[in-house]
Length: 152
Image 1 (cartoon, rainbow, N blue to C red):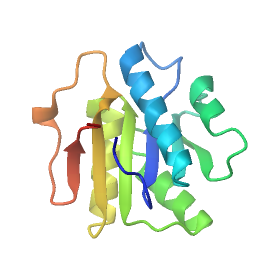
Image 2: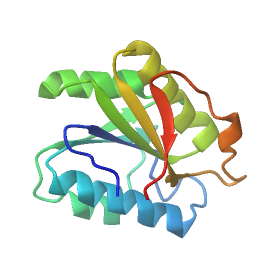
Image 3: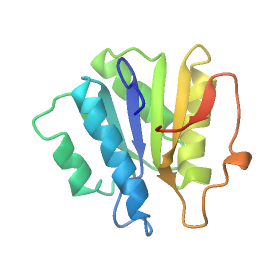
Image 4: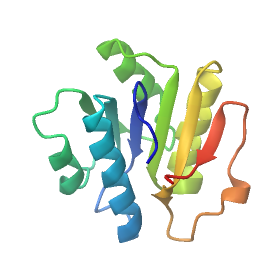
């Protein structure tokens, strides 16, 4: 399991009405949310157009005060993540990103987080990302601080 201590977990578009999601990816996202709570990390759920996040994921943070649900209108949710961190006075030096639409919303959010915070680390958890057409990690953007990682 990835160590989420001191990191911000960003869950992108984990909405049941937003496409058909692979159950294994949803399970992996849930594991990350549970781990973030266990180590007292901040969790940001980005919701495309204000749709609702999977109830099973929100149950993981019930009675936990270190999470927010942030609506976004486009693919890139980096500004919403950074604003939520600033409102909560959370460090912005380590992010872990997971969710859906690997080569659209996950990609853009992770890429722009890495661009806007060049001194940060942005890890994208491959097993906890999904796209209906499959995840082609060889096509995912690379940067010195943007790293696809495995849960193992």
